[in-house]
Image (tube, rainbow, N blue to C red; front, side, top):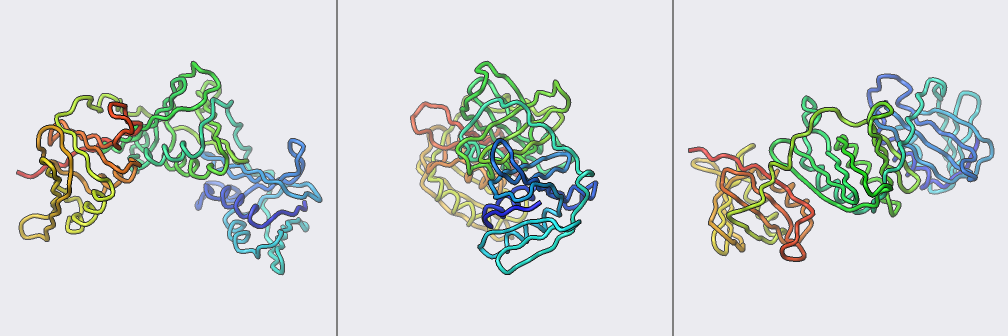
Length: 379
């Protein structure tokens, strides 16, 4: 094998493929990236593949191929080398059982692993539809903040993806908060109805990394032909991941549709005030919020502890309310709403609140809702 490619193009493709490689693999060859140089679909390309039996990643870049071939090399090491090469064209070639990477005056010789021991990457399911890459990445990041991180409850570490026609609904929860985001997409079949539970971290990393192309193709396997799987492709990159098992909570029943109070606060001022006041809050100590006519008062700390209080302007429609939240969960929601004005909807001080952005048109439904459970006050 022998080919030449621009350093930045190679380094980016290697880094993207290597990002999901396991640090402690079940089989030694899984730390490798498979490099295949040759002619694919009428173009001289290098295809890079990584797979850990859960997530697969494949990138394709245009290169000048002198000798087609296939080798398996340690992925993280190749990523470090290509990232640090001089900004000059790179040549990669094989010499017996070794791979030689040359860039400018730098030369690296790497050992290879047996290609025949490398597992076959799963086939990409048939494409279900496409969505704008930037919109998809933004929506996934809004929802991923509420996903659980406790591996003993695997169904809560995922994002539920619901497809009904032209609408995708993303939802995640860790039992203390719930994030729901709706967005439109272009399905191949306008009557498509499907549900998938995708590992949140994989979905977030994938959506963020596929914004180089204008659109992302989503390919959903329903499990009729083996294990359930979902695939994403865009900008010359494709990735698949196995779906999670387990029953996701019936979250729609948790979303109230009537409220006794609605408050609006400048999002940036709210964020800064929460950060300041929660400086004195001990770990797991709640941040207390008091909404009255024209203002919001934030408090933390009690008795002999350090205390903080700050008042902000706020518009309140409805009853005055005092409520307490985990400050970290509140900041996550405020960071995700993506509008200048935060709107908080309350039913009572002991019931979940819904945080949204202020809709562009009054009366329209928000695309993003962040439900947050209050913390019960002592006494």
